[in-house]
Length: 189
Picture 1 (cartoon, rainbow, N blue to C red):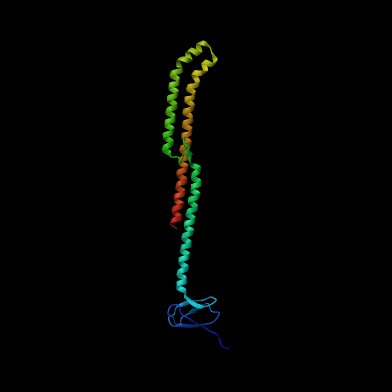
Picture 2 (cartoon, helix red, strand yellow):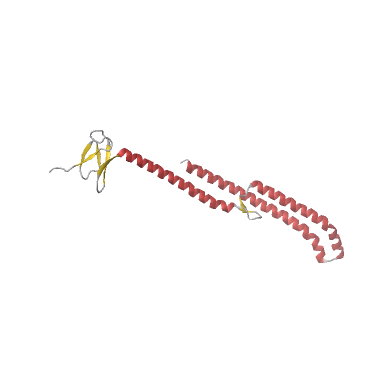
C-alpha cells in the first residue's frame, strides 16, 4: 500500500517537499525550516511557522495594547462621572471643581461681610432700641434686633458653607489622586 503525497514548495528556500494529504506541518529537508501546510480549494502551500509566530506575537501585543487602552479609557470615563459629584455651581451656572483656597477665600469674604453687616446694623439700630424700649411698642422693639441677627446668621452660614466646601475640596483631591495613581498603574502595565 503506497502512501499518496503532494509535492509543495518550501516557503523559505523553494525546495520541493512531498507531504501527506492530511499533514498540517512539515520540516524542509533542505533548509530545516519548520512549515505550516495551508490548503485552499485551489492550492496547497507552506508558510514559515516563524512568520506565523511573529505575526501572532504582534497580534497579541496589539490586543494587549488595545486592552490596556480600553481599561484607561474606561477609567477616564468613570473619573469624569465621579468628578461631576464634586463639582459646584457658581452664581452664573458655571460648574467648577472646588478648591481649598477658593473655600477659604469665600469663607473669609462671607464672614467679613456678616461681621460688617452686624456692626453696621448695631450702629444704626442702637438708637432705635433705646427709643423702642422706652415707648413700649412690641414690634418696634424687635426691629433693632432683626438686622444684627441677620448679620450673625449670615456669618454663621458663611462659615458652615466654607467648611463644607473645604471638606468637599479635600475629598476631591483624594479622589483625583486615587484616579491618577490608578491611571499610572494602567499605563505602565
